[in-house]
Length: 74
Image (cartoon, rainbow, N blue to C red; front, side):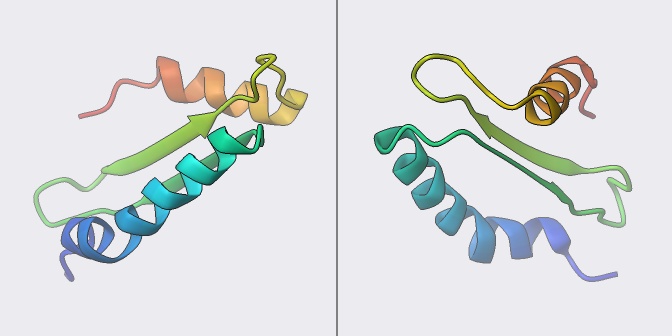
């Protein structure tokens, strides 16, 4: 199996860091989730959520953000 965690860290994370910064600066709510299983961590996921300044988020995004907070990450 490819090392998806390494691919995420090296190729995706720098872009996500910039996307999150842009969203915060421009009051844009967003959710992103990546499923990046590895040989040792089959259920590994990386999630990011940004609410807008008022804390508003469409219902379907709010549900996903709530689930992200409640799911135990291993």
